[in-house]
Image 1 (tube, helix red, strand yellow):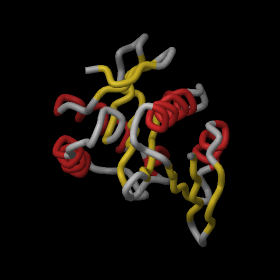
Image 2 (tube, rainbow, N blue to C red):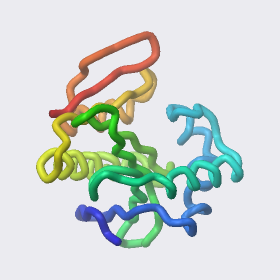
Image 3 (cartoon, rainbow, N blue to C red):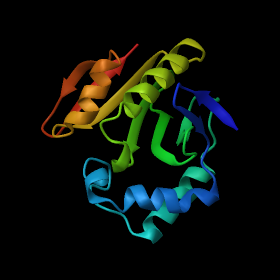
Length: 161
């Protein structure tokens, strides 16, 4: 089921059949370097993560984990999450298949998902935690009007209200 549509993509919930697409992204060290694990994942690690994603019970249409599908190719090109971290505060995160880097997909989806979550939902604030070295994600967040609210040794925290 389509959750959200942009000009070039649509978001849907992940399915068990998405494992190969997830493995393609997560086995790429350059994609994974700024994520939680910080390294490329094995197929078994990606399978375990997908299992966790499939078990997640979202609170609404606009939170949880999302497969981003390119309308033209029908391929999964990115992974987005919007998860609760407080009563009315959520954290956004994303990774994009390297083949689609630099083409504006992360910005397009981040802007649309953030807007929908804040205007059509009970969410009052979205935060994003980004590694200091992740220039691409910082750029996406700034373009989407997130503001820097905290900086520590390794992480920048951005916020959108």
